[in-house]
Length: 287
Figure 1 (cartoon, rainbow, N blue to C red):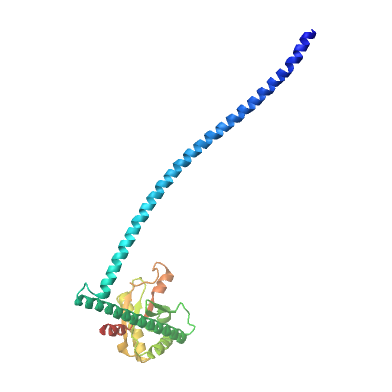
Figure 2: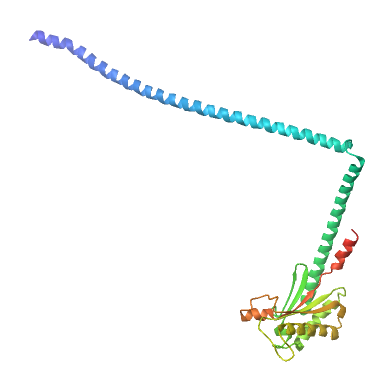
């Protein structure tokens, strides 16, 4: 028994050493496996990087080729431009008649620019005159209801719209007394501008009309226009050669004839200040 115990005591260190060595071996094996996995991952990453590097290298080569081609085109264009400029400078490769034609074309361009500037100046001057005329008309008429009279500029033309409610009784063409006073204020402004020509237009709604000597809306619109013209001539002394009378009937409405308000707006008399085209014709005659 004593011998057996002594043997066990002698084997104990060996057993302990064996257990410790097994644990250390397992730890080393685990570390080896981890490093091996990391190595495999790095190998895969390296392959991917190599692939991307190859793609970038190809892209760079393509870009370098395109840049080289563009540089060649730029050099070619610069060379051609230099030659063209040199040819134009010394006029050595074109005939004298061609050179003269080029100079004449350049002179014509300058003349056309001056002509355009003169037209623009004339238009600007005309616009200024129109605005002054509008302001004078509004100042002369005063605070009359905007629904009864409207003064405006459209596309370089001055319009004075007067409602038939102010000018005429329903279905009549005799100008009311109060309206004659308004026409007198308009006439004062127009008379102060003797170069101005204008047209008086009669407009109606689309309701069929026939009464007495009036056959239809055409007749009514013309009669109303001539009634206004006669007052401007006979009562306020405007030169008849500067005026024209026209009937537009129902065919140039400014509102919907389907409503009462729309028909009321369409029944109107319009004074159109005619543009002075002779100024532009004179400009054209000198070109």
